[in-house]
Image (cartoon, rainbow, N blue to C red; front, side, top):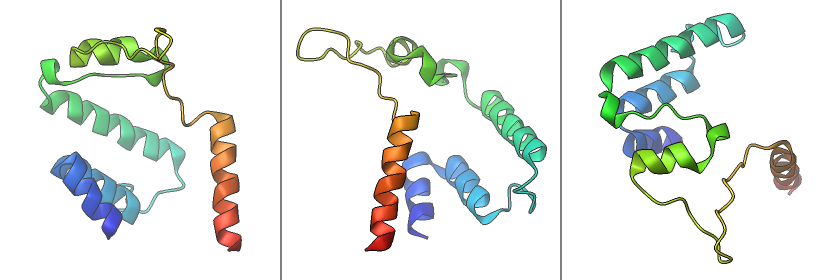
Amino acid sequence: WFFNLLSWLFYGERVGRFIWHTHTGLIFDGKRDDEEYIRRKYDEWIESVKAHVPKDKLLIFNVKDGWQPLCAFLNKQIPIDLNGNEEKFPRSNETQNMIAIARQMRKVEII
């Protein structure tokens, strides 16, 4: 319940509802194992967002593109590190990071 409350508070009603339905299985009509169905529902969600959010308020963003499109959309400078170089874009879902997270989770389970 706590995660669902946070999703509503931080992301708003529409996204909160999507997250709630995703976690409860409602959005996938009990078809969580049907990858094609889930992809179709995801695509429908994206199209719904595009249809309802004004173009000047919506950024279709791929993290592979790095800072440039995100900072341009937010009208912000690209972050600079202490050496005056462009800050490396965070990639917490990279394989090595995910392996480290999984190892940490296993340690917690053991305790």
